[in-house]
Length: 342
Ligand SMILES: NC(=O)C1=CN([C@@H]2O[C@H](COP(=O)(O)OP(=O)(O)OC[C@H]3O[C@@H](n4cnc5c(N)ncnc54)[C@H](OP(=O)(O)O)[C@@H]3O)[C@@H](O)[C@H]2O)C=CC1
Ligand SMILES: CC(=O)N[C@@H](CCC(=O)OP(=O)(O)O)C(=O)O
Image: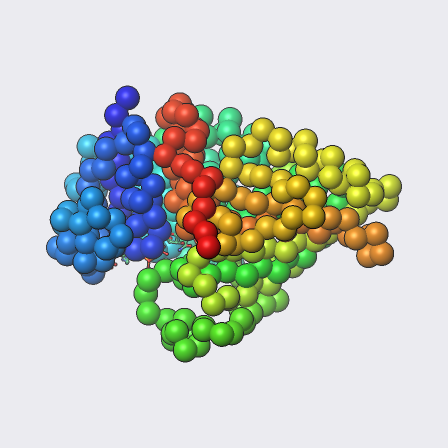
């Protein structure tokens, strides 16, 4: 089977990572590549690491250019996906790396994104309970946000086993690529190097309702999430430290057993051996998520830590994994758990 795939937003970080993975996918042939301000440029001038595609020219992003493919990946700024998607027809598989179709609640969308809600598509986090079934045969996929991927993978086993109270606290560090390629003053090298800083404090980050949506669905009741993101001086990676108060009767053994059971058969999510801790360097460029969990008896809290590459499992790898499931391909095709070290 050869799947012909187009990538809209090929000049950006997410689009570039989708292309890096598709170049190694045994069943995919790369079709149209589009950009916006960079339309007309050679891809090699913008994504010099994608050597086999260096001489391809970026077309403008339009339905005409994207038509005629089996799969279209959208890696566009928030709010740009719906207009393109509605012109592509129901038979093409559209994988949206943006936020437009992630949230079920239109009021949440309006509160955090401030525009009209485009709708809700099947959610591209296969590891969640029922996640794979929702993607099989689907022609539309909403790729999760990078932080919600890291946090949901770390905490869902605790909620699936009813071990935690419905009030989670998350502090997560991310690399600068999460903010995209556009120039932003707080992301200048001299602002970021040698420093870590919080942002979106106090429930303001737009990924908060997505985490609440995911964990509440697993728990069967509303789970609140107090989320504090921090910016770290690295290009890629998320390290999410998540905790929740344990329900009575929980101990270290119960917690470990629940995580072992939930993650046993996952090809990309690895519960580390006891005593070993997740690190962003270990998942750099790979589709792996590393998880570790501990029980703090003095505080009565479950502490779950995850590390992912925000551009791989957090965006493009999750997108390709979900595409594979939707098309009935091997879920792991084109994806690796092998990182780059040191
Ligand atoms: N970076 C990350 O870690 C993650 C990103 N995502 C999502 O992926 C999407 C892209 O993000 P990212 O790659 O980081 O952003 P970038 O800023 O790096 O890239 C944005 C892309 O969109 C194109 N673009 C800009 N404005 C428009 C427009 N008005 N219409 C059509 N295309 C446009 C740009 O083209 P040009 O350069 O030619 O102007 C570029 O190809 C976003 O929705 C983001 O939320 C999701 C998860 C994580
Ligand atoms: C450093 C930085 O700014 N990170 C981004 C990560 C979000 C992201 O990329 O996800 P979306 O797909 O929802 O845009 C942020 O916190 O907004």
